[in-house]
Image 1: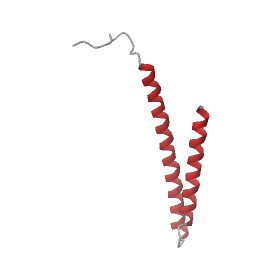
Image 2: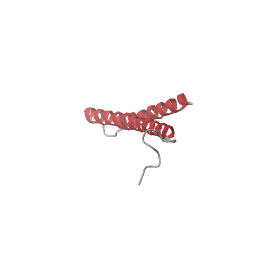
Image 3: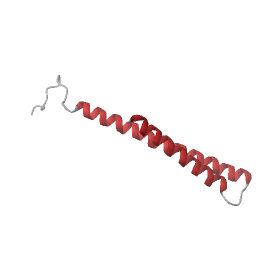
Image 4: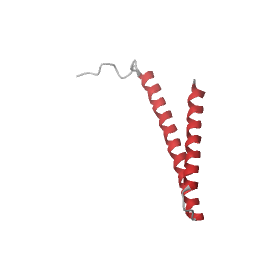
Length: 83
C-alpha cells in the first residue's frame, strides 16, 4: 500500500497543522502561567498566615485573589495583543 502523497511533496494541510500546534502551545503556556501565578500567590499567603499565626486566613485569601486578578489581566492582555 502506498502513501497518498509522495514523501518529497508537503501535505496540503501542513500549514494549518503548524498554525494549530502553535496556538495549542501558546494557550498551554498561558494556562501554565495562570496556574503558576495563582499557585505561588496562594502559597505565599499560606506561608504568611503560618508565619504570623493568624486565626483566619486573610493573607491566603487576599493573595489568592490578587494572583487570580493578575493572571486574568495577563490572559486578557496576551489575547488582545494578538488581535
